[in-house]
Length: 119
Length: 346
Image (cartoon, rainbow over all chains, first blue to last red; front, side, top):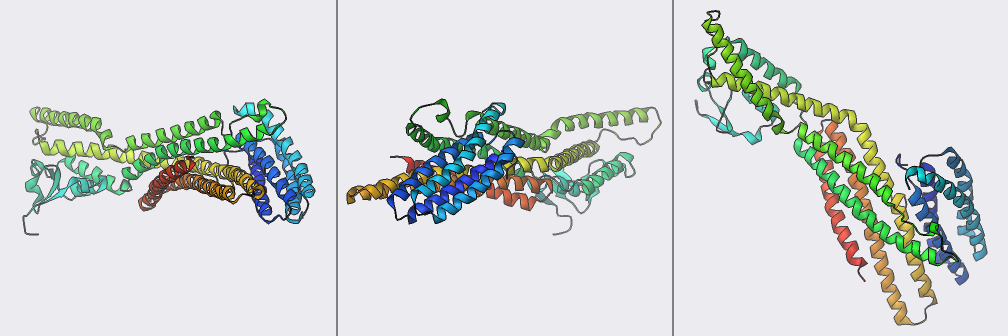
């Protein structure tokens, strides 16, 4: 982990990138067109968060932000299970929506810190 | 070698310590080179006249001391290559960041277009100008540092000092003549190019050793910080294709390719499907090239950190290897970037 970046945001960023990789693989094996379409949409949603996090990655460390990480990691583990086992579009969407809810809270908090980092 | 035959050695082959060694062994400089003689005294104008002169023995003693303490020099070519590596890494970074912003801008616009309402938050640069400016400032500081080190170990640094030492030699000579005139010393040194050369050489070697010693101390003292900076910059780029900025690029290209896959699965016309396959291949090539550009930049920054560490530790061979890696990566990055740009053309 880099000393130059916010470690928590970097960790969330890397989790999301891994999820995009897992979803891309799931897309190729999806038999249901609805499931494939849902995966495609979720990759777009996650990529948007990755871009936001990349922009914010240099914000200062924050204990409050660090405290958000465990919840996100737990939710991400559930997302990974959902990606591997889901056969319905709804399962993937629900799992990712919960996860992205936590991610968005962290991003919103980081945005408040961003002006301090000159972003 | 025949007796009394002199051998002229190209001065450029002799670095500071070796040069001093030659002088200590009784060699004299002539015509830009060192002349080795079987009878050194015959080739040292004036030296044979004061075999017990305190100045000469003191000069030889200082030179000998310098040989003992100053033989681990900071290799200027490696230092210069390190500096060039930093300058090129800065250019690499600017190009790489521009390409990242260009790629992600498309995704940012596409995402904003898919939303019911346009807000300020939806439109942004993934690598904002303020972040790029921080990187530029970081590189500027590192470049200035490396250029100062080059100046410190530059042969040109000794010129002023040499002039001062010639003045000092003349003063010594004048003092000797004054002493002689006063009848205090019977055989004080008269005006002698041998003495002037020896004293000047002592001055030059002293300053060179001081500069080398200073450079080494600076390199050692700053090494942990310089390595932290360069390795941190490398980590921001990403050690794998799914971490750091490389991870962001991976996700964006995956998103681009998924959209092509989506279109493909909904398309029934074979000709149009074929066009989508070609489009997909083009994106795949661009994604690979862009990741390789960033991977090369990552390796360059790591190699620069290793080069600095080797220079600080006095391991010239390791420094040369690391600097060679930087040069190789710079060439590769340039080629890959050209490839990436070529693929980007519609």
